[in-house]
Image (cartoon, rainbow, N blue to C red):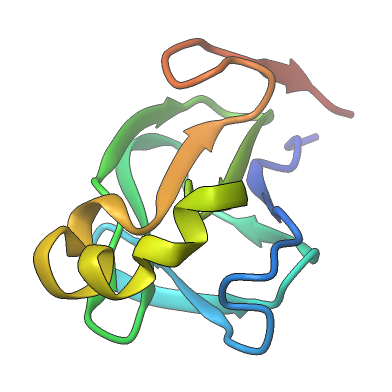
Amino acid sequence: MKQKTYIEISRTSQYVNKLGKFSVLIDGVERGKIKDGESVRMGVLPGEHLIEVKVDWCISEALTFTLHEGEVRKFRCGSPLRGWKIFFVLYYVLFLPKKYLFIEQAGSGRSGDESSKIS
């Protein structure tokens, strides 16, 4: 019996972009949208992939991950603009659009690995 292979993406709830939906891109192709504070699950074939999130012309840096048969990979996305940094929204959007959003593996900071097997 084949095990399900998918990714789960959770978006942080933030004042910045509260009303906008982020596009989720896997291997450069939009696979869906995610609302503020929402979590989505997407089936992905095993193999090496790139994942990004995008809103308007701002796009996160691409994150590479490898997914094996029956594996679940969890990610978290949002904007690093919190607290006093929200006053710099316009600067980020115009001059640092690749730093306006982030995508990271959940539970790992910005550089770890978390996965689990499901049946």
